[in-house]
Length: 295
Image (cartoon, rainbow, N blue to C red; front, side, top):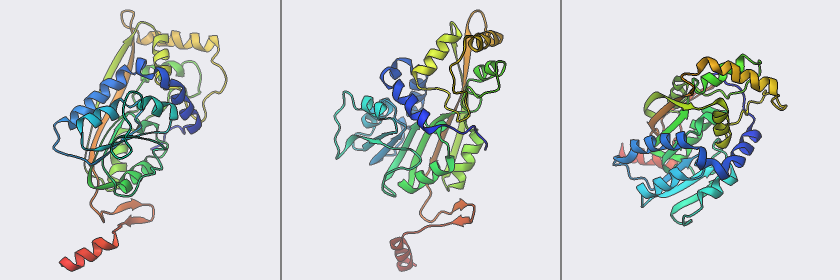
C-alpha cells in the first residue's frame, strides 16, 4: 500500500482551525456517522468502555453515551480545539459518562485490554501508519471487543483530483487507503470476522468554490508532505475551475466520496500477530497458569 506521505503538523493545525465552524459544514460526516451508529443500534453488545477514536466535535461520542448509558465513553482527538467543542454542553464525569482525551491515534495512552468497543468515524484515512493503528487497537482492546469504523477510500473526490491533474503535477487532494488493504492489515493484526463494504456517495454543488469552502470548513486541507507550499495563484485556480467543467451536469458540480465501512472483533489472547520477523503470539502469565491448571 503506497500513499502520499502526510504532514502531521499541518493536519493537526487544519483540524484545529476548522473546529469552531466544523458542524456547520459536516453534513456528509454526520450522515455517515448516523449510518455507522445504526450498525450497532440493535446490537446486544453492552460495553463498559467505549473509545470514540477521532471524535472531532463529539457528536458521535454523545450519541454513544446515550446508547450505552452504563458505559464510560472516551472521546479521543489530537486537535485540542476539537476536544473543546466535544465538551460543550455535556457533563464531564471522570468516573464514567463522557471523558475527553487528547492523543495521537497511533500511540493510544490507554491501558492494555481496557476497551470493549472502538468506534471511529472518518478518522482512519488520516493515518500515516495503518499497521501501527491496528496493532494499537489490538493492545488496548479486550479479547472479543468490537471494532466499528468508517473511512474514505481512494475514489474519494476523484473529480477534484482529475481537475487538479490538468493544472499541475503537485498533489492537491489527499490519498486514502483501499478497502482491501485495510482488511489485510486487520487480518495481519489478528482481528476476527472482519466485514468490509463500501458505497459511493455523490454530493452536488452550485459551483466548485462551494465545494472548496466546505472542504476547508471540515479541515479537509491538502496535507501531503510534498504539496506545493506557496499560495494558489489566480491562473491555477482558473485552470482548476475550467477543468472541473468536464464533470458538470445541468449546472451542478458533483463531488464523489467512496465510503468504507468495517466491523471486526479483537482477537483472543494468544492469537498470533504477523510481523516482519514472523508470527508472534503473546500471553499473560496468569492465562498460561490458568490453562495449565485446567489441562
